[in-house]
Amino acid sequence: MPELPEVETIKNQLSHLVVGKKIASIKILLPKIIKLSVNKFKKAIIGAKIKKVNRRAKILVIELNNGWTILVHLKMTGQLIFVATQPVIKNKHTHIVFCFTNGAQLLFNDLRQFGYVKLIKTAELNNLFLKDGVGPEPLESNFTLVDFRAILARKPRARIKQFLMDQKNLAGIGNIYADEILFFAGVHPLRQSKSLKEINIKKIFKGIKEILRLAIKLRGTSSSDYIDAFGQPGRFDVRLRVYGRKGKKCVKCKEMIKKIKIGGRSASFCPVCQI
Image (cartoon, rainbow, N blue to C red; front, top):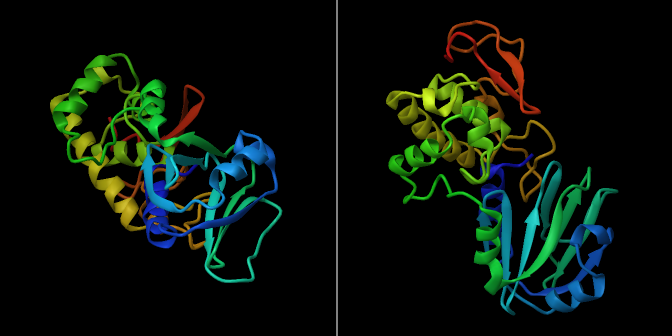
């Protein structure tokens, strides 16, 4: 599933590729993806220009110049691919094609069809995220160690792996980066928040900032279906220390990486380095 670094990568790319472009038409090949009638969706966006592209948690926020905003959630296998020139190479998993007046196109692909493309009034954006209870953005400069400590204190019994993945606590962190952050910090994924010492909290906080920033620099992780807006895989895969490495030797101590289930999700960790 694309997490914060992958969605941030696409946001950064689309900010250069589509902002200022006018939507000439749209092909909706799988209507259920848009969560609205085809006619209403087309009426709202055709003729509009893309004003800006943002990200909130794991959601792409594409603001138009006519008071509407397009929300794109890639979920498990969604992709947004920009094609500057013809011919456009669609596949059987291409469900939406945004066509711009200069001939460029933006394709929404989704193998498992869990993703969505929604319309919302721009004025309602803030209320939407407040209603959903989405937590703070971990890479914002105003998200401090003090803030992180306070959020942890509100969930003393939470397992730290589940805590990091809960979007109501922090926005955008999922399975991949929670594993990597905890390895960085040397903290076992089953530890409860209340058991963490100050040094643990500081290391986790540092890991959040450093690992997410590095993953963005390397354009994310392509361990599954993720590719960026140019159709290219991310390069953070080679930096993975525990995620997807069950049965392989730890890069630090050479112990075998283990994998366990926590609340229906998996957690990969080193039983020696993470305590």
